[in-house]
Image (tube, rainbow, N blue to C red):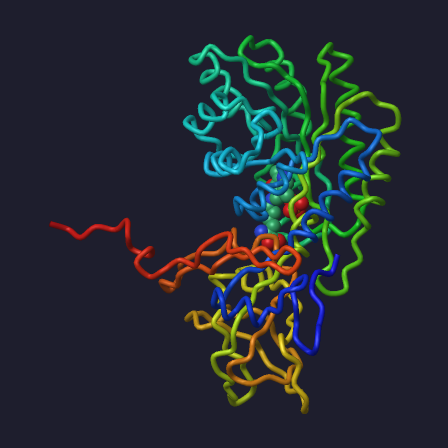
Length: 414
Ligand code: LLP
């Protein structure tokens, strides 16, 4: 759902003019749409109807408590990768029993905390982790529910930094090593083997790599069945791409239909871990133009948002649409949109045609996923506020950091 539109020449999020949000809450601010978020979840959910499916929203994409809470209210489960994310899910009213714990480096303390909370499943990524999980569970007198994350060696054809299912990746357990490990796990009384997990990457815009990974998983399930290990669920991970510019990812319902078709009549419960496809296009970053700078070879728009607020352009050369909040007449010029951070990689967009003046507001679109969650305080910049619009109302769901927050936990030497 496109939650922004120009009304009387000024850009609004749902029915709230972004100018008003900037006045009330300042800039830079992340702005999310409740309607767009809820619609994205419902579309995913409805496309799963008739199947035993649990949607485990991947918290890393956008972990604001209000976002997690809205999703929990709709029945969503969660995919977490740290004790911090577990604490967020619980604080937001999410259910541990609908939460899967992913990630290659779970610490003992994190495992303990997740066992106490009663998570649905640990997605185990190595032999070492399996041993640690068994030891911690034993020390607590608990039985840990386990999936192994297998590495299907499938090329998701995405940016190399977000491909995770290739043989050379740090993620998952090599296909051939997984079968003996399953047998080992099945023998340990502290573990209950309940599933299998795969996640091949992110921003994947073609359904075929997902199907290829599913095929490998199904082969594996059959091999396990033959050895007497019977699983309850398949976790097919996340990774479905969205449209930032001109990508043409499959619609959620087509992606799901294709996977369900391949699954046929199998009685297994299916878990998905979507992140970006639920939240990516439900948010924007609102920023104000500080200066226009006409350099020797290029023109620059210097904004008050920077790479520390939205890292994706600097890190992945990602393209985000830039919309002027108030349209101006007059000839456009080509600009790089850059922030105040002292790095040449500090850009939000490059080579964009804009008619713009100092003081104008810009909306950096498709910033609902991996925006705020990847922000930092680099250059001692307080992080942005977060706002959710709901119809005509804007709610501040995270205060802008203030400068004292930046060093409140630091100490001087005596
Ligand atoms: N499950 C696992 C185990 C994951 O590692 C991820 C994302 C997801 C689910 C959710 O994937 P999604 O549906 O959002 O594609 N920072 C990068 C994306 C990193 C993705 C990391 N893992 C970006 O800004 O493009």
